[in-house]
Image (cartoon, rainbow, N blue to C red; front, side, top):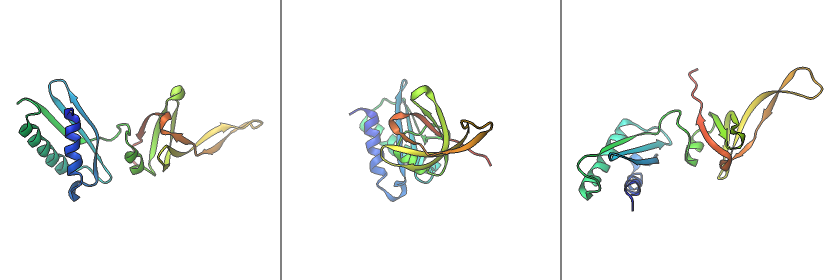
Length: 162
């Protein structure tokens, strides 16, 4: 079992505890120079205290089991605002928020409010001004496309400061 899998297994065990149940791993990277980056997300909020406690837990196990040498760097942090959504659970958490979705086909971008998330797809709501045949002015048209996850190249939450 590779190191990243061992670390994820340790974290998943801790996520069974009440204090950490709302947390989950988005990604673990083992980079050159023994830099380990652990990115967490949450159904609520990832607090500094959570990261600190989980980092100490991982450090203890890394050192006790001799998985790395004496020199390594471990970073445990929140996945971060503006980073692409990767997991189904992240989409569910963001229902009602505006997403910017880049599709695989033609690299088309769709921006809309995330209305529904199911196992295979999402549904966005957005409006667009479109010229209707036979009319001089563009009209506002509503769309609710179902977008399969297989067609999403990248989806990010649009941050609003209003």
